[in-house]
Length: 232
Image 1 (cartoon, helix red, strand yellow):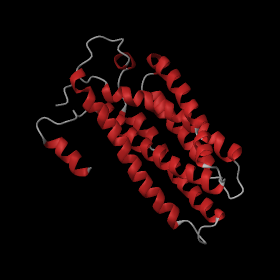
Image 2: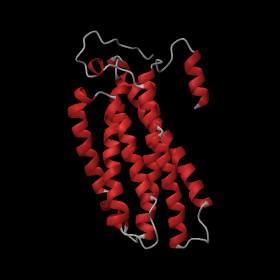
Image 3: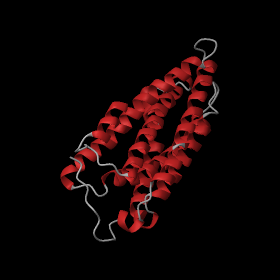
């Protein structure tokens, strides 16, 4: 990753044109990927191992997150001309962090409706608020012939973040699991993972506040003469 960034800053025709708003989208994608993919893995562990849900029921248990994400993303997309990119990208991580902090209450005698459901709903809202402006920022001002590259880099950064998130969270859970593999010990490890995930989610907010400076009219296409950037 470091070599890729270094090469991109030195070559004459970089794959990705340097632009702070697009950089904010890539960083938000990277961090949200760590929280989403890494966090969901341990949510699934808790639901299946500790709560004892069968795989099919565990899949159904995630439906509230999906519904909340779809509804929120639709509302954000509809109101993006009024909201701009900065506000939802900065507020969404607060919901994500709140979801992860709620999950730190997991225990061996916990329940789905208390420990999981509120967090899944908050997580869906937070992801819906982050994903919509993030995708738009990554493609803003990019020539249509290069939009595939920009979109692919958003997805790639999210997957890389998810991979590193799983590695980090797995290490934390293993190190924090005392007394073998009892349900209480596993819950202790999961709780610490969710605390770290909350900390990572919070980092997206200052990135949005400090890096996103695009005018709302330009971002939503209501201002003419939006510059086009060629990536290749």
